[in-house]
Image 1 (cartoon, rainbow, N blue to C red):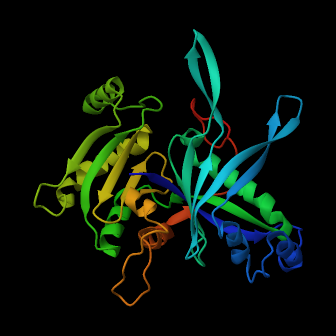
Image 2: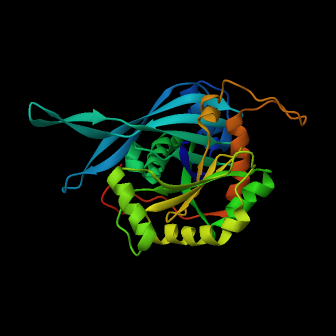
Image 3: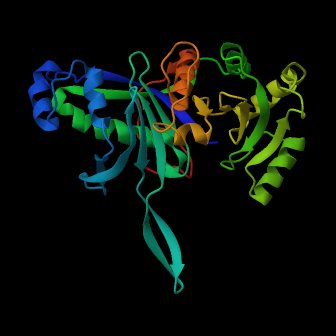
Length: 337
């Protein structure tokens, strides 16, 4: 199940820049469209059709203060459906192979999927956490912010993307919230192994399991699944034990506790208490293709949009944590985007 890190974005006027309406003539000439009624509509105009955006990022080069521009490909996979957009953003890197006993570097462009919810009152960016950008979604967010701000500058606008983190480090509130708000149930809980960094204090059984995971190149350490015929795990009986495991995940930095629900998707908890949630692959692949019938009088919609509606409710308990900064994260596997 793909995991996404969640951000909020603000669409604001550039400091000391022209007003939005002062830039409407330039906007109309550039996009050959009618005048935009709002900044939200202006930003959404970049995603009205399937196309490739090349995002230009200025980067320092060498120690002499020189700069160059690096291009990142960003494809609109599903154009704005009810103001929700699906993108694919490529990272730039190299991959080394051995040929004739020599190390050869090849261009390598792994990509991550990006969901932008541009609806009024939502303003969410969800970035898939995978091999792209060395697994650092903040780097991907920074590329999106800088790249699209260059395109928005003609309108006197900019977007500011802010990471979302839990207001509390408690494990249970999000679990109970999803169960109660969406009448959902927990199918299974996994203890995942990141494989990054070293243990700080784990000993005994946790140390042994960690050693086995490293030896076997494993991703999961433990899975608690409901019995056949039982609708859900007995969370009340597991409460204290899972609370202790969650504390270890928070302290160690190499474990994640992932709760999988019957309908919602999944919720990931660990040392990085950023908003991390997962959704079934089918909900992503069916976006823009297969509408869901609604029996509550509402218009048909997509599974992905239903999930984003739920996420908007969940994220009200998360706080913006400042402005993205290059090199904000540390670690041997982190590289500049």
